[in-house]
Image (cartoon, rainbow, N blue to C red; front, side, top):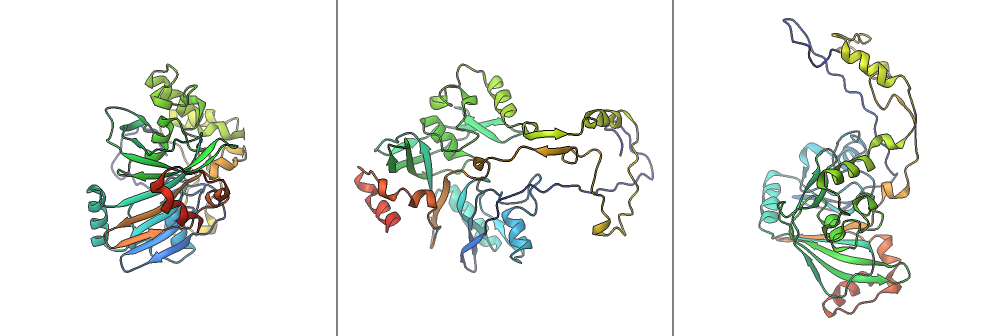
Length: 342
């Protein structure tokens, strides 16, 4: 291993050995909702990403479909993503034609996308439309914010349940566009952030938690710094290698750092080293236990419908358990509530 300023020389050889620490996930099954010649539709559990990313490789929906369910994921085309904590309908196309048509229909807004969310506060009875544009606040974390110069967005919200004792509501969310974190950011802007949303239901956005785009007088740069700091992975560390930072400094200052030499062509799995001196995870001895809201957020992808197809997921427990507290004053919601409580 060498430093970033090393110049490549003749006869230099490169070996790439990936060293990963797989992130833990809840022990929840991936249930198949439907399978046709064109689609595989699953009910995504909470706590895992859709596809391999970062330290999630095997512990992702596609990773588990391949390694535990024996599916050939190379034939599955991801049509859209759900956030790690979001549950519900997740669709894969099984061929190019279906993939192309689905995404073209999405662009034409010919796909109906309905979610359910549990939010803080008593949501108004009338339908609420939010068309605030959204842009990236932090590229490193993928966190978004309301921005008049951002991407166009359109969300429609209807109250389904209101629980005055908890001061929470269950809301039907229909999105006409599909921007990253769109529902979460729009509900934050409306002043009804999703319960347990560790990113957008947080005082780091100001005393109003970003309601109406009010960030407590912070500049966008200050807001970005504060939000990124709030979610810094170092905040989870209880105990780490005290020599790690100095070791990295010394390695970076040397022209060449000699690892233990490995015969990569003949190396067996059980011969792989279990420790890497430059790995941040190896240098982390103990982390704080993750709270429940790290795994779960009450945002559920309930129903997707398009030209000649419709898929619906079972209702989550946090919807069913409040069925005796329904308060509905909107005539057009009656069919939705009757279906939910049937």
